[in-house]
Amino acid sequence: MANQLTVVVVEEDRDRAIAIVDALRNGADCNVHVVGNTSGLARKIAEYAPDIVLIDIDHPTRDMLEELTLASGPLERPVAMFVSGAAGGLAQTAIEAGVSAYVVDGLSAERIKPVMDTAIARFSMVRQMRNELAETRRALEERKVIDRAKGLLMKAKGIDEDAAYALLRKTAMDQGRRVADVAEALVTASGLLG
Image (cartoon, rainbow, N blue to C red):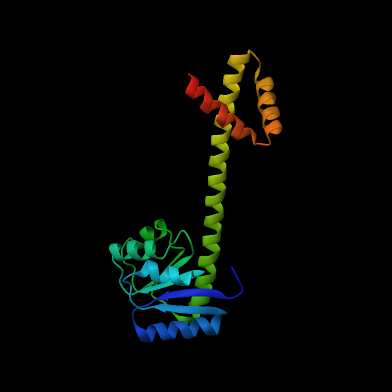
């Protein structure tokens, strides 16, 4: 994140919004934007492209929670939600929806900065895990395609596995392509011919 954070505060009560903005400006180097009306929330948040979204809701309903978390793009940026009461089971729903921090007993000035820092850290950790998982899945899929291509070469040319892989690798090098791409082309061509 940049030195100066862009923060969107979703708060319908004007006085509370002013207090939150003051607390943010006193506690962190922020560029703060307040969204006071939740209609068209996704568009309003997207206009500001914030680094983090702070949502302050007294008593959220499940529908409101889903709408707000989806609108604020929890998979794109950290979202910290402050609620007044326990709201029976909504914490789990919020976390599953991607909210980085779910704070009960509302938003108080002295907790804003630590909660923001925690939400940003948690979001970064979850994003890194998602990226690593996607990379692992991609590598596994490539491995499956390479194994299938080796099997096709072994059967068609009567060679062993090492020789099949060496042929794939040599072809990839000769064509300036990745082994997985050559394997994919071979498997696709085999599907068309078979």
